[in-house]
Amino acid sequence: MRRPWIALALGLLGGVLAFGVAYWATTREPRAALRGPDAELAWLRAEYPMSEDQFQRVSALHRAYLPTCGELCRRISEQNARLQEAVLAATELTPEIARLLDETGRVRDDCRRAMLGHLFAVAREMPPEVGRRYLERMLEATCVVEQAHSLGEAHDGSGEPGHLH
Amino acid sequence: MNETRIEGGDGSDPGLSGVLRTWRVDAEAPPRFEEGVWRRIEAGRVGGAAWGPGRWLEGLLSGWFRRPMVAAGFVGCVLVVGATAGAVSGQARADALAVHLEGRYVQSIDPFSGPAR
Image (cartoon, rainbow over all chains, first blue to last red; front, top):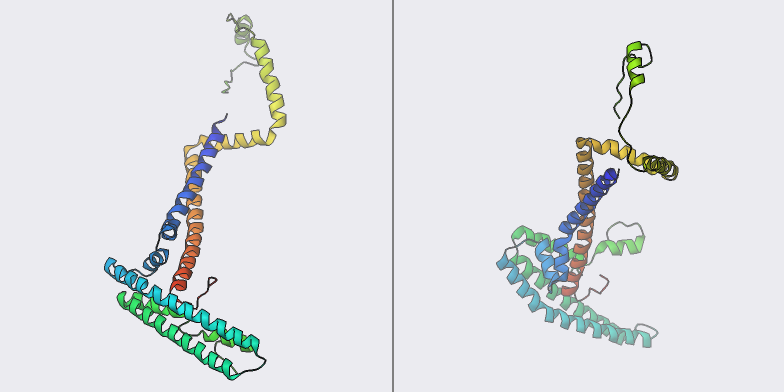
């Protein structure tokens, strides 16, 4: 009389196993990428297919750019600290604050130029269509190009793109 | 239990009725047979009262799984449903991990990108 329960349990166990196998198979690649030492590059290769040679060149570009990025981060951080200190010590827009704002803008432009140069270099190493897709996505995800829609939303509240006055 | 209908078993066949009246069973019942029968009847009463829905479901499943096609269909459906659910939830998890990894990549190349980006 226990046979139907055993059949039911085995069937359900099979379903659970099927769930586990399918889940494991679909998440295997990103989980492996996450565990690896170069998770970002593993993601880049999975998302933007390229040959082994191209990937090696992209990896070399990435590693060469990291110290530059670190230096730019340091400059931004220092500049922001100087600007914040000057603003908090004043009660109006002083020539010193104006000068620091100009400097901040210059640091920002330097960062954008360096980052854009890196994005172009990486995209050139990829197959043309893939490189194009990479550039489009990175322009959205990074601050190389200001996202105008956020400015439009902040000013008119309509959610329409564009800086409206 | 298969039931065999005997023509004349209701007494309409005097010949058969006579034979049945003379029929004697000579075989010995096993030791404590009667006690065993009462114990099984009692267990059936108690079990039936406590496990009504369980017994009902067990009967239903017995009926289903007696037919190989139904049993195979059940197992097939469960496997397909399990695999589909696993693939869908796995894909959702894979997408979330990809977004997370993209954020880490952007953070590594964008000096303005904070940890929350």
